[in-house]
Image (cartoon, rainbow, N blue to C red; front, top):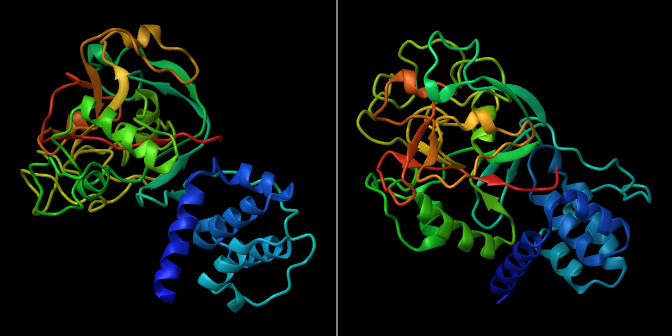
Length: 341
């Protein structure tokens, strides 16, 4: 019975956290005396990663909520065994500065387990300008864009994560559920997002083309590929790459080395759907800030190259397209988590 109750408490905690907008708003509400936000914040600090991992702060927030009469705080205290963490909670423990997201910070969404990496606000030159010897027509003109900070998936969405939300696995290469999901159309992903957003109360979207390129180029650096400028047989999953035993199919997400931002498979494995509609002249109409091209075109942008492509198609500026209803075993996706940054 105790284990059942413990499991129920964990589920309730996860649900409550999924309703929170972000840690900044939680902190503000907790400081204003809201005991539910205190409880939520305690769970976030206990389960967080990096700078958000602080069991002592978790203890102090839960203790403060309990002092205000919260029965939920008592359950969290026992379930997380916060009494194990020694030290006295000073009256000023909550007087820290408002949390700021920083480059490379990782956030793990509680319901799905999908991990996101933070890319800070920055301006960069998008498209082909001085990076490549030859520019393809759809990569021009090079133009300056500025992006707000955003959270992008550390990995491509896996078959396991898709099946957890949708109840089925449409992928061709399905012997390992940690491979990226493929054989999913742009239209399929819109259904996936509707279900996912309703389950988590978060706001997930596909990356814009500008966000994707910025992430591939480590926040907009002047590099040709996610790993730098060297093009000779990189260790990635593509047709002319050093793929090891994965030639001719997908590989598990995270198998090859990440880029400097900590993102995996930004080159190869599967191409990735973006929000934007495709137009080879889209760059002529890009807004300078947070551009996304959404005109009435028949195709959508895909980026990143796949296990079937040559190394030249893995360039961060390389653009491709597909019909929204098209399913292919070499196209998948990663997500962006929209938050107040």
